[in-house]
Length: 361
Image (cartoon, rainbow, N blue to C red; front, side, top):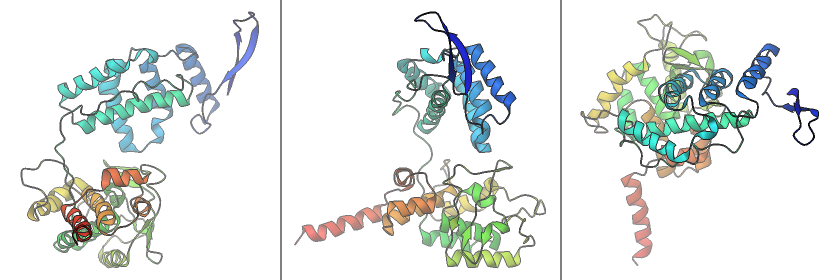
């Protein structure tokens, strides 16, 4: 809390007032807090600051607490899109209609998919939310949130790929034991690729059949995971545990601090390359089993198994959404249902036939 004196408009007297600087976790040292005070004085405590100044505060205070991959994405969008167009604009001068025209313009000029445009909007909106939370801008000021960009952007190249459990098993059984274990763990738990590659043997409790997610591995960097929800322990089944034990007995890197899926080329010092693994083993088999065509250029990797698990749990196994959310470690059941669960023709046909049996007497 920063205490200071101002001149009161009513009677011209000097009176004490205060404003919140932020959490101690964001400003661990006294010098950090004073630096923030000085920066606010430069832009005006009343909150009339430029987008560039707001971005600078966001970069320094909030962004370092996010996962490495998230930091890189936010930096790119802030630098390449938001600051280029809006950097010199005051936060209270950004208008909803101008925003929509801008979103449409960058989508056309940069050939952005609708999902990419939504990501730009999400980060811009978070910037305003950060400003409101830290009293840098009025709490109710967020023109980005009011901007509807539905339909803006090109139709994405990617499609929902659902790998039936039977196909996942066939793919796994065609691979060497290390890669087989990786596929079965991805298919059986829905773990993210970065979580799988970040595993060390000490993270696995074979007795309790659980995995502690102590780190992620992405872009050659160790990270902390996306959120508190995503870092919750993963429950694994008996079959997955058995395959992990078999691989643990065979791997030359079996110490508690060794990577579960190490690169032999790098003598176990780093995990295998996820992108190379997908290129060499996953994509060719997705083509072989008719899940994608050879001409398909969209996303087709380990993440497909995560979508597949959600879809099968909800549409075939009739698992309640809350349990499925917990297994996938999503923030809310809505994410599991709206983004990760895909209606399949077989499930739709079964549902219709059940209804039809009651309809036709």
